[in-house]
Amino acid sequence: MNVGILALQGAFAEHAAMLDRIGADHFEIRRKKDLSRHFDALILPGGESTVMGKLLRELELYDPLLAMIKGGMPVFGTCAGLLLLADEIEGGERCFGVMDINVRRNAYGRQLGSFYTESDFDTAGTVPMEFIRAPYIKSTGPRARALACVDGHIVAARQENMLVTSFHPELTESTVVHEYFLDMI
Ligand code: GLN
Image 1 (tube, rainbow, N blue to C red):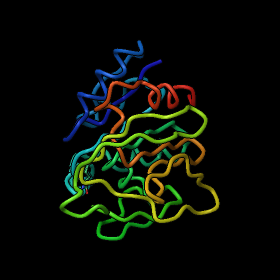
Image 2 (cartoon, rainbow, N blue to C red):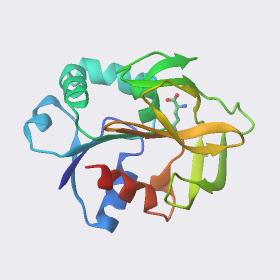
Image 3 (cartoon, rainbow, N blue to C red):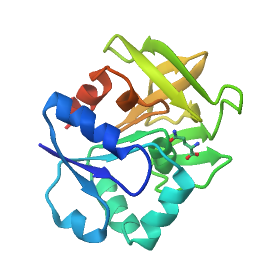
Image 4 (cartoon, rainbow, N blue to C red):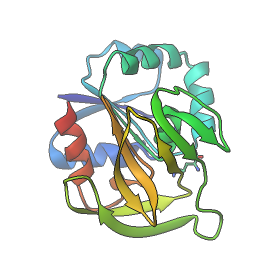
């Protein structure tokens, strides 16, 4: 199994380290020709969604990646990666717009910009969650399913081939969420 990690900006190296720990092959997607490699799944990391959206278009990665995601490529978006996949965003711009979730960007305000907590994640038990200027999911449409909540807000969801978390599992010690994603493949 080989996982392509979008590596334009943000926390891509931490996802690579996580995949190393669970023994999954991976490579960085930085330019169009990287997409000619074979891969079974895609990770969209945290960072700055507006910058990533702009770079995706400038580097002509937007259309081919959108086609792959629509074609069923398993994709895991964390934080800014969640924003790239969301269909509706308050306070930000729609990018791929493929996931039936309505999201509030920078939802925790300045004071609570970054925090750590633990909460249940679907059937996988309690996982550590690192939040950094995170969005949360205000609501899910009929095709998406909430997987985790913190303080009454949805912070993880799944829809068909797509998994999103508003927190950063790659910044914690737990490999649970990455293993959950690899199980989707
Ligand atoms: N606030 C960032 C954005 O809007 C996301 C933060 C993150 O990925 N840690 O893109």
